[in-house]
Image (cartoon, rainbow, N blue to C red; front, side, top):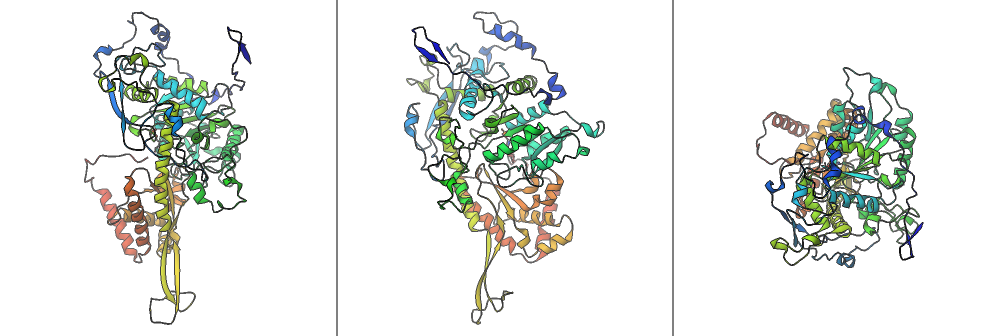
Length: 640
Ligand SMILES: Cc1ncc(COP(=O)(O)O)c(C=O)c1O
């Protein structure tokens, strides 16, 4: 469509012809359906009237705020070096696009100074960043300038292929834990074994191994947690225990057919899978058929590693393997980008396997984004994206719970992204004298994310290489028969043989921060003993290894797979076989020695022949668990 400008020239106007999302309000919980808008809301439009005397709200005077300004030293967006977007690409060091945003700095630790002024002269609330507004009571959807930035970024850049009209609406959250908790309030009714019928019990689907905080949020509401089979990509749609199997053969004696799914589709925590677009389509089709809402918790979306795709594929150099053809547009998992797929405008973002929102024809996806892994977890900042009717209900929940994320954090992040306002440049704070600080805008923000991906990808490569080279126990000896190794006798006339025992295996993570290691306990000489001993025997054997790792000289703490088992059945059947290793937290130069210590510890454990060593480890651990913590003042860091 084209409209005539006053001068007579025609201006093309983009008309959004996408269909509206479906009305899925039947999914709302009883409490959420009955929520009313905050009574304060009716006043908002009057607040904006110039010169109006504000005697209505219970707002403290901003003159009395403790903070006059807020300042910080921050990184330049190009502090870290990116890695290639595809196994076949050179790294993108496209600084020419950055110069447009006048971003200086190199990959060094130079920093930039950012100050949020007390009062900005800017009159547009969507551009105004200052203490007087950010630290005042605000709107539950988020601090307006940051909300505007993220909304536009979400609609135009993160999910340009969203199939419904207008694209997703957003609301700021205090991170994904908060976003998920509000989502559960919105879409699930509490159930109690004491007073409710089993037929009313609601269920939530999740991956067979899942992020434990999410499960711990769902269980106390009485929800039936239903694990779905996974493979190296993530949730399976087909096969035994896959989504179709569960939904088609739902056992109503367990309660209602599940209407909610919790899923982590990139860098799945803990298995590290990255769900392909094709698998998403298969799962989405089932969710659409059985009317299931998809809650996509995606903290690791920006951390997708094409180099791992190449390492997991033995056919990279095979010319017949078109998935690695340099002339084909592909995602980080080497899946070709569909024809006609809209670009974000950034090569790096285009290379990432897209969110479910991009195929959400019904409007049944609730997506959770967080700043935790890309700015800092302590910011407690994130945003939720979904069809507008859902976001409006989450807004009502926010109004009566967190109200909004902290104004300190929102204004700092807004200041970084938007920059200093020209209106305020005339009287800049002392440290900014003479210079108008440009905001990062989309270009700088994407460059920052790309650099972070580079750093985590390099860490992942270092750890994986070391773990891979140590995954087999190599025993050289001499044999006088095919069936047995005898003690080494260099003078005897026997065959020299090398025996390799696989102690563990893993896929190189195509995304996220974790390596999901499967321990091949069955190759340990003491395995038959523990398998026979009791139903918990193998769990005890695994626990002994976990304790062994924490001992000198190894001193490595890993997360046991049982922690991520959503049900006791999964823990007992498979959870004990896995450990999750995070390559993100330790100092960069420590990654190689720590990885080596892990591999050495496993090899030493595999050499243990005496069951008493294992029993002593377990005994010692049981006793230490009974003792009060020795170092009560050691700062506690949460395990995610
Ligand atoms: C899958 C997943 N969701 C959510 C979180 C927590 O996110 P936030 O800090 O935004 O609450 C984590 C942290 O490890 C995570 O792995």
